[in-house]
Length: 159
Image 1 (tube, rainbow, N blue to C red):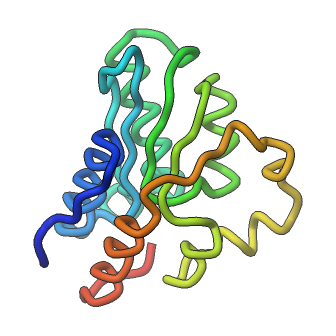
Image 2: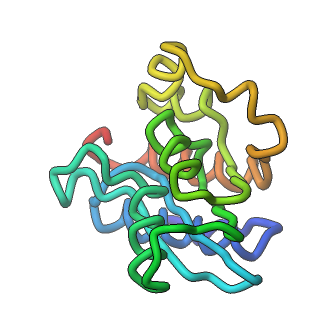
């Protein structure tokens, strides 16, 4: 694997590190996330679909579970999530359900689809994504696209 990619945002860097750790270990796709409250990381996660045989264990869901365990609460109000890929419909609604205040993502739903994931197809079934204008914020897309390129160059099982 190539040298780690650096993003301009420190929390997106941590999300990238999570994603790298996951794909290096063969856990799943290139999706890493961190949850931040008061400028401190309270939860981390990456795609663990393959290692857990769990199609719901996406990076965002893994980070939400970790954050809730760490703070002993199921309500993540006052938190932000940084994730390498724009959340799929399941993860977007999990973020809303957890009451996360804001989502920062790197690669778009379209980018996710270009590397073989069905996010765009599922999103077209009817998502309120376009209504969440200030909730979803794209940052550090170029750094996350480099992660996706490295993932594509690796031998891997899709998911």
